[in-house]
Image (cartoon, one colour):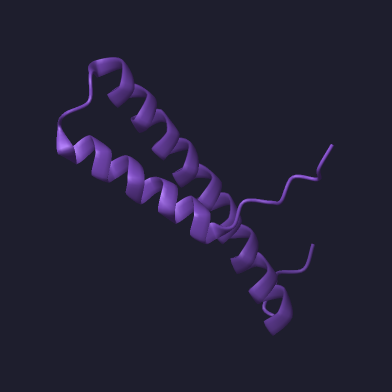
Length: 68
């Protein structure tokens, strides 16, 4: 089995953009629109998790991280 590459923040942003574009088109049947909305929301949550991790890492590198 091939090792799966981690999803990049850019990939997640692209997924969100694609979902928004598809939903704004207004041409999707309800089930597909719901699936696109769910996929977009999932990508937003994953992107936020990555951004939070990046922020924590930057604070750690700057030495601004609060003591445990």
